[in-house]
Image 1 (cartoon, rainbow, N blue to C red):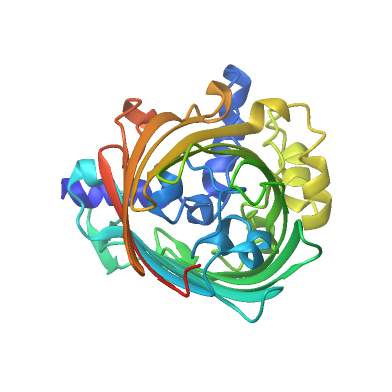
Image 2 (spheres, rainbow, N blue to C red):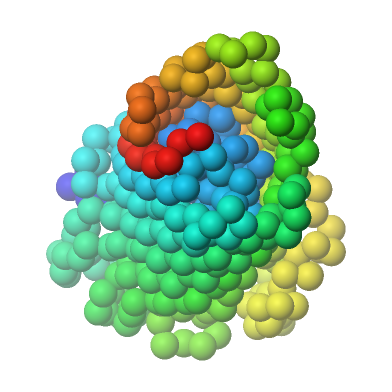
Length: 378
């Protein structure tokens, strides 16, 4: 029963809209005002490589997960084709073995200038027993969410690449009627635009840049009430890496990403009119208002990481993620390692325990795995 209660807590943390209103109502008594959205799993790093680098990946070298981070870099990949699968236990500290994230991704280069990519992200929240207000059992349900991606990338020049993608999102968190509220599966369609600038020289030394607009799409709703639609995690990201090759056996990369959700900050004014204005903003208008609501700098998250390769076979990674304490206070260190042999690669990452109580990261003490398969390595 304890595990079921913890799962239910996790479920409603993911329901976005209800949490947003709660934050708006309590923000007047403190300076904490967290931007929340539905389907937050779309912003969780899908692969162990980037997870080991503090969740940085916008401008790193292209791999099978480039479609998530920045599809504009895929035409510059050294392999003509790459596929990968990742597994991430969720809330492993609580021994919830049936709660996990599964990610599949890959790309295929049509020629030297263009490529296509696809991906699947699946989030299972296990089996949950719903109860009424008195604790009597109602029904069981298996919440789950997934997103299907497909996209196209092309070189604009010898140094610039552009990528676009479409995404179908499905979020099925509660079925039927629970405590008098009728829930349904929520769906949305979103798109990405990615840009990459490759300034690294032929010898492997230099600085690369990237910029992304992701999850630009319609609101999502879990009920038939049109006034209760929630924002999805539209995001603006920029990133840069510095590559240094010491010799034929040793090279290192330093990366930094800055991300800002294009979602309005919940109002601190709890009046019905303020909450209604927050909820009823148009999608496009909400992207722009999120940049002018007064909390812009505080809402920027910072991901920094480093990756060292020895003989292009063994990799060691470390990173740090920072978020302002008034906007969620997520701060953690990450470690990672990788092994590559011929066409196969295996990556691991580990998030060091951080925070306590509600600030405890769900991925603390979690080992994540990615298996990769590359073809036509040059």
